[in-house]
Length: 119
Image 1 (cartoon, rainbow, N blue to C red):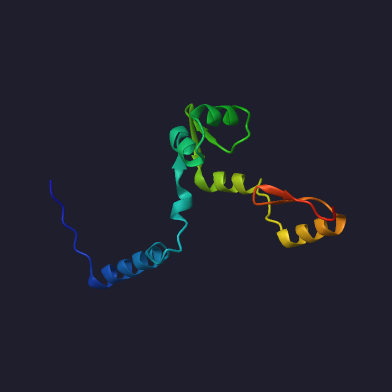
Image 2: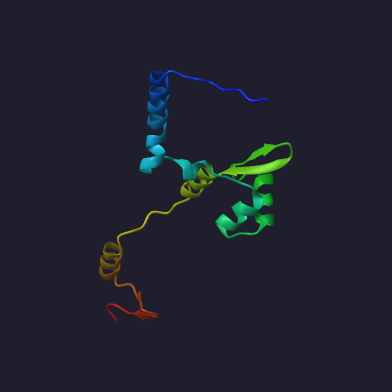
């Protein structure tokens, strides 16, 4: 069975215009498409460079954000990235650390050896 549909050109143009508006974020690279990825256990283990067993253990203990549908574990990339960032340790200004240590007369590590200040 074959069906044909004839639309007025104004309607086709309006539809095309709406489709282009919807595609603009994707085409310009401003889409969060990469964050919409859903991992299975194997892919998440590869992404985090850990074993599948580690993923199963963390999921069982509810330590890692996950979705369980029909007995299958799934993980949203954006949730995993947010979870990883929650434990992020900010970088410190090492020049302040060195100055504090100098003032207190502590030993400082220097390229594999220790430099003793105020011997």
